[in-house]
Length: 456
Ligand SMILES: [Zn+2]
Image (cartoon, rainbow, N blue to C red; front, side, top):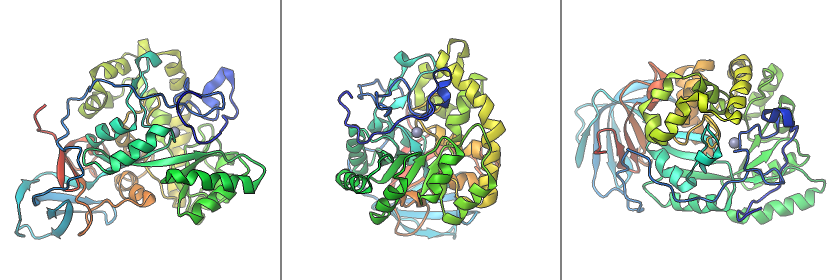
């Protein structure tokens, strides 16, 4: 099993050599990195050259902002209240100390003029494999970063937190380092456990042993008999459970077992309304991961977003060039395109509409670490795809900000006493959800950590 310390056993299901896209992991975990037990293998981090033109302005220390900052003139786009209004934000020592709707409100310390700009809560991606970015030309050109570097890069996309779904040993270290840094997005780390087993007492004991890693959340693969046992144990520890599903039958069993969320959609069929209603009734959250189910195909067809300057900042010119040249794609990338072409719009988009109609809470999770999905960037694609599928722009923005924050128990939004953490946009995301990627500034704990006009 190499030198990674994987924490659980899990098995891909329904793997069909002729159609690997239909196996339990559906290539959503970087295939080719499977261990013999089917656990996705996260490679050792290797030093990689910094490809990024953006400049992170913060130091990696935990020191909070020492001087007061006052942000004047920006319009706050509040996803919860669905309002847009001009605010004067006063931050001191990393926290918001006042929020005024009065444009003449007094300002203390350095004044930052945000006229004609829009303030939104920081973005949160609830499904990430932070190891890096795969290349569509084959694994030899993959960019292997490790979660800590990803947390640094992602901040330049306005991502202030993400849920790392792989429980490889380096990820726990990265999680702890990022938590004590002002130059990284906050990492929430999921502990991946097998839901298989016949002996509940043994499963409970094993669960307790692994709590020493202090997971932020439990990830399970659907299909095991012990999902209910683990969901109950997790609840006792006030931990949420996310279950990776491949079919609606998987999802139905997980929802009945009382898990907190299901992630992915079945691509071959639209979700039955009865299941969506059941999710709403039980408060089960959906993390559909449209980006990993649609965007390799979009990229291969030359999607307009390949020209988004933020994407180039995130992945670098060389990787972007590989995505732009579909003739050089690997067979795996081409297979992924075919699978997505059949599933994304015909089945996944209608499923989103049914989930919405039933009243299920939907979160933005892009499943980075897979083909067609990009660390930092793809939370913007996820919000855009959710809107294209049928959410309103307000709902899509909630999915990538406040709803995701609530699920993770992380404070975002503008509240007096809360950390001064938010993103400033050049354009209104409610007029066009794609404007979420038009970043002007990223503010983390009262520090401007990224600026569009910073020296490159
Ligand atoms: Zn995943």
